[in-house]
Image (cartoon, rainbow over the protein chains, first blue to last red):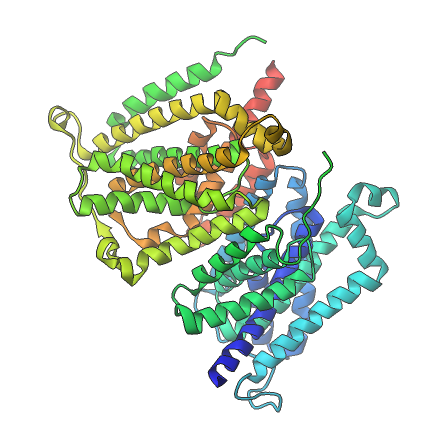
Length: 290
Length: 317
């Protein structure tokens, strides 16, 4: 029973990471109907930036804040410099551009920072009071930080003018332009925020999965699955999907099939669910007027 | 509108060039050229599915792998001669593709991408699994002998050239079939399903049957390519069929041009040659160069090579 509880909590902790990246995917999907396959590598790259800052002597939380700023800039810059040039191209062309970005970021990280795995520091001391036998302080801290970020993002989109403008630009670009919203700018901001969310997830995940150029590949797969399981049109679905995927992955790995093929098993369960709920658990079927 | 002769001339030049090439270049380049031909078959398969019937697949590497393993297992146990393994590999992949397509066709867009992605992730892990090790050789994979040219041809051709011509024959046959397929009733039905699924169903097209049959056919092409690929490299192992193969195929199809038959040849050329060019440019970060070239090409030719050719042809009237 204790082992089960431990696996369950571990699943929730990794689920919060998947949920964070999933929400980043959902943000970009809602705005442009593209799945950003480079999201994970963007998160990995920004995590390397924070590691460089820490190496240079910055205290953890200063590096954390600087990295968030850097991630925001990097995300917006990529949107303005590259993605904007193909925004009217066929969907698969954009997908290939994202794959190109993924390859570039992965290769650059290996070239600039090396391929050795790095022990990334955790900001939460190992003997903190909130730790327990089931849940290490880092896992507690990681879950809290990710959930807090998600709450902030929700508040931003729900209660601020800018958030409202961004939602409007995503929902109906033509009408938004008519009421004076600069849609292009909103898209760049959206990319910035998505990249920022990814950076939080990357920095929180790095102490567990270790920092290396391929650290986010597996996480991106689970996040993609989580976003779809929750319904990719629904921002609430992303974190919930993340928790479901995290728990399922951990339990399947611990009790059913072993860690070797748990990824395949988790994916197949998700696909099986999707066959019965083709728009995800919390997605609505979009109705098209003929 | 006057029918242009340009495509016919292109095909003729390609065919003549294709027949002469292996006698003019080194055996390494023949190997590369054979690889291009093999990918051209696989890309044609993916393009039928993605370009013509509009279903995205991130999992065609799995069919390539299944085809390669089907051929390798049959050969390893000496159940069949090498040339007979290729149609069997195609048939196996048709069955798997059709079976996978039936439930998967309920899914659309990113959801279908995830389902096929799952297939691509799962296949190498299943091939590695202990339960199948007796046939698949586990992580070690299977080593194969290179097919020798038969009797009469043994004099003028060496093994590399023989395999090259074998692949060339398969390319010609599969492209003729593909060409006829998309220009007939079936092709019109597929394009109708891609562009107006509701109208297509109203016109009496059995959408479900067409979609899963296309999935099967597409997998069959890719499986045949996989079997030829196994003969070419003389070795199969689970780690040769990772998700990267699937992504590579998708890149080839989009760069070559969606819903284009001849564009696939360009796509195949791109995915074999450009990584080499990239590593000539930069030793330290070749993949960054490759990624940059990929993005550049997509910005310059958003509809792929075939799309660019069409646009130029339309402008010249």
